[in-house]
Length: 87
Image (cartoon, rainbow, N blue to C red):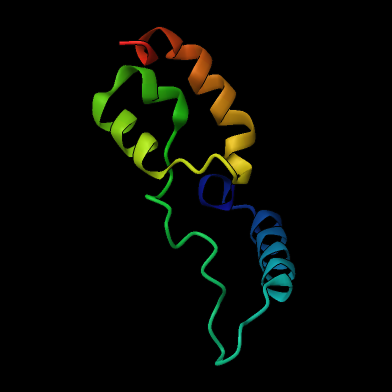
């Protein structure tokens, strides 16, 4: 918001939020951050998966049924592509 409006209040709020969020991150032994997203291909907008073959391949290769993302994405993906599963 600050970038668009140039109002200092938005910059101050963002800096406060950043300090709070940074204080909540814990380091592992050796001073390194925990690699929660080490196997992630990055941000994948799953809504585009039905329309792009390469995104579908990335989704299928990296989707973890047992992970948090699997709770919502697995039923959606299976219902969307159920007809293709039997081919």
